[in-house]
Length: 193
Ligand SMILES: Nc1nc2c(ncn2[C@@H]2O[C@H](COP(=O)(O)OP(=O)(O)O)[C@@H](O)[C@H]2O)c(=O)[nH]1
Ligand SMILES: [Mg+2]
Image (cartoon, rainbow, N blue to C red):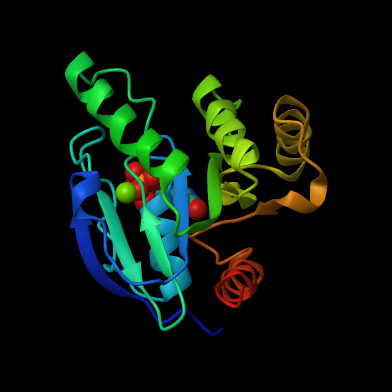
């Protein structure tokens, strides 16, 4: 199985620290602990490119990983109930500022846990992307934890809740590599635009 050649570039704690240059950026969005870092490591074929299972809600930074033709931006996860209000506010200004204003943002991956109903914040992320006309795909991950019947019911719920066509949804598992080739193809396609 081929992988994406990605290198860590920087961790930007504020919008003033975003990279210059003109690489198109592909954002990874999803709630804390959904499996964003694991997806990145899986696609890159590396165990520790992105740190996994860090304390949810702790790091509130945009992490940039670059390839020759695009950058992947791992956004801070949302929806972790225990974060203080001040952290929630700084998350909002950082992530909203990035999603709503960043010129280089060209595409996004919204990551959902196959075992959970999408949250209002997941729906809000999609509204921001749709509002700007940003190309996106929805990855439903941790599918290895489910039985086939449960998974197909869950995919129906997700499609209905978020008003998604089936071809926007990629079923994924960082553990088994399900969906890896399709996502690599999608990333390379976005990098060409
Ligand atoms: N079984 C399984 N576990 C996963 C998968 N993706 C992530 N995890 C686990 O879920 C936890 C959170 O993953 P992480 O990538 O750190 O989530 P993040 O907070 O969204 O970056 C870790 O314990 C991962 O090992 C998957 O596809 N299958
Ligand atoms: Mg992470």
